[in-house]
Image (cartoon, rainbow, N blue to C red):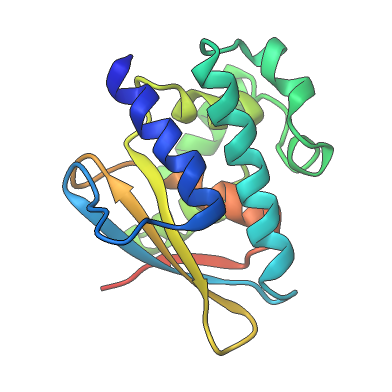
Length: 176
């Protein structure tokens, strides 16, 4: 837990101030993303940081259950999450997905909405492999250059993508 506490405290600081001069990322370094926000960047960026702060503070107090954390999360986020799927619904979706060509499978995964439980699962300390590093609004009003500190490569970043989509982003793409 010591390592995760340090990572979360650093993330909380960077959410407000960005990395300090000379600060180096841990793990494998950073991965950069381009976030497209057709409604402008300020509100989605504020919303994402708001949710990450809530999760980080709750995690530092001892990882909460869904029941404990859900009321702390903003309504704009929880209302965007879909209801939990039944095993039958999940099996139907998987059968449909398996019949798609690979490029359409990728697109279906990206466009699929997340349940709150699914998102929280990937935010648990033992499952989390990325941490906020920095974000800059690009000259274009609707783009954010995002840097995430990562533990390993490849790493699961669907929860990051969903958080930005729920906040109003239209796309989150890893830079080549």
